[in-house]
Length: 231
Image 1 (tube, rainbow, N blue to C red):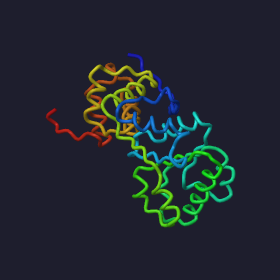
Image 2 (cartoon, rainbow, N blue to C red):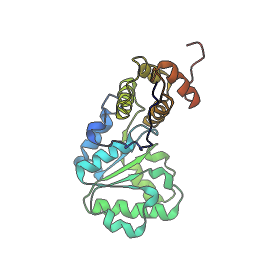
Image 3 (cartoon, rainbow, N blue to C red):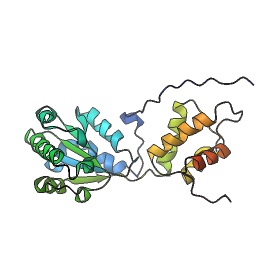
Image 4 (cartoon, rainbow, N blue to C red):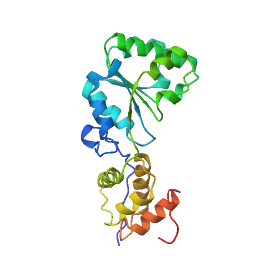
């Protein structure tokens, strides 16, 4: 049997609207993001666990409104006038809690964006009340932000994401692989990417490709599998 050759070509994350699968776990949040011209006070906090699609949806929003995206930890005072002249998404806001210079920079950005009648999208894993912001003026402004919640992917969404990730790598798994993975893997897009990448490597040169047995081994090796050995 001829061995396959594998080239180390990095996978490109697709972040367009057409790549954003909509199910009941994210439909409400998507609807709230899409109504950005009518957000109360011009701002919205997009909240959800790691791997729930916040960054993807933020990119969709930026593409729709011509906005920019920046990590909260990268904001500096000198950037604020430039950032505030268009819609802006600030990611991972909770990560700056207790860092005075960053909290002050976000406070000034918040005020200038809204004074310019632009829109402000904020992302985090928890709602604003749990961000532990030390600056009282910033904390009060964050607390007054409308919240859109993204849940962890449901079965339908996780199945679609896995199918897309396999297709991107030109892998056709056995029919029972995706249902098996959906049952036992963590419910996040991050985990889905790790599982598919691992299976891509492990299936190289195997005659049967990606099988349920290989998927079971991959989940164990990634320490994702929580079932008992009797399944």
